[in-house]
Length: 192
Image 1 (tube, rainbow, N blue to C red):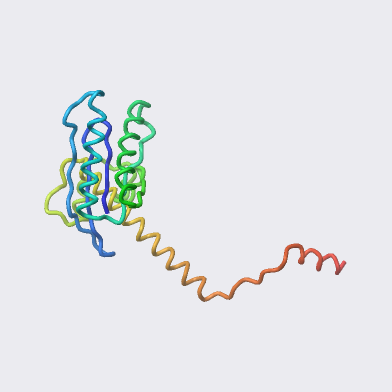
Image 2: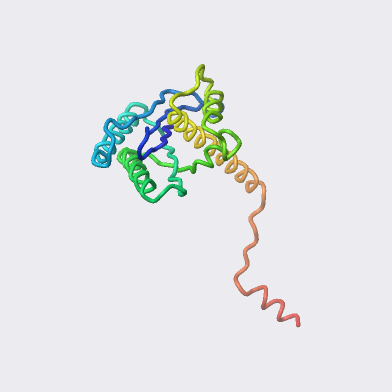
């Protein structure tokens, strides 16, 4: 699983993890910082992010990409720039036919730290513990990307358990009797 924490101005974090269904292990993480600042260099930044993600996808062949969604409380200009970065993430995944899953910052924090308003340091410590890392992942953008990937893995495991439970519950039940529409009301009317 490739997790991405997109950023309009700061560093775009990435984290690659694998899971055997019980444990998760970190394969690589980091953050791509802008080589040049300023709006005139933003298209170059988008190209750098796309190149980096394409290389990660080619090297690790993840089954999916998990990306943090746009935080709506941002000002409009920042939200639009962030949406453009997310578009580059979606494009890199689509070019390799990889599914993309979005999670809000609050969902990621609640899933990983158990609290939707967890701070950066708390998230870094939880990511470190969940992945059995010897050191705290730095920078925080990379830890956030690992947290997004962990959130997706946990969400997928939860959905799989729900589906398995639903399948078991319906397997033992007889099929419900299906009556043609209106039959019940005609029978009731004939008794009156």
